[in-house]
Length: 434
Image (cartoon, rainbow, N blue to C red; front, side, top):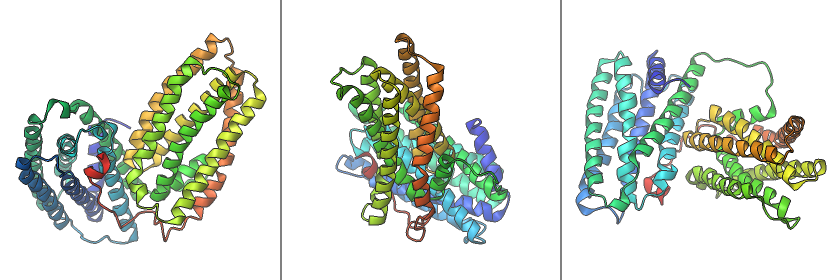
């Protein structure tokens, strides 16, 4: 992915290549300022100290004003054509998923109240202007743009000072680990920048691939082009993590056997992964649950994954008689799928919050893979031939199981669920954290 600062320089060097492209970029920055203002206002609650209310409202007013100023300095207020209009929406969606995903991160979720979440969230996500605006100011050739962005950047410094002052007055039990939050913000911002580079570079030099990819890759591409479908699929993957845990336990409980020691923490991890995935799309998904077409989409996806799990574990039970072999080789097969499928989604998705959660799960699955190898070796049932056999079995079942999902997405009603939505709804810290 390259270094963070290098990625930022590359992105801003692309967006300043021509005025309509720079206008799309400025539209995106304005949208982020708008989202920041909504987050600030949404954090106000009964937990907000009365003496802080005025400063917080001024903070929100600053962000709304920044939005308006940025919109005014665009070389072109309107896109040149439909391609540029789509580019604007794609960049805005990526940016929004970064903001939403950051405020839904597991650490901020543990905030004692909305005020503490605001203080820590604002302190850390306010690093974004310093990471991005500074590089953009150096890259743009428009003097009035440079002057406006410098003024905005100066005001963002005041917001950092405000956050530090408010944090000093928090109770000890309201304090949260700033270093960890800064790390998460930097990681997610890097993901956002890298994805934007791919989108802008692809817009400038479209490449048509002639080789038909595997169904699994077709799926992630279709999901990238249909953000609403991504919500349904990530929710489905969350359900599937729980389903996998259930299948693994049944290998032993159906035989009235005690679960292996190593399975206990493994099951806990899968259940936690299930919750993380479902939570990562909670707010966006909620907007569509009233519609029967969306609910049917989720049901069809979940049914496909249920068939995949059932077929995979049924075939393993026919091949191996030992419950330890079924569990360990089955877990290994599922872990290989997680590594590949989740990594593919991370590379393609424009939902930064989802990418962050999937990356974290992939890292943890590496520990599970080590556990499987160690347990197989200790039981003297480690076999490279069986690894190859399970890999081939799992791949065949997964690729065939998702064909129906691909067909479903190819016929997806894009009039009702457009690939890039224009009716974005504001997301607030209040909704995310509590």
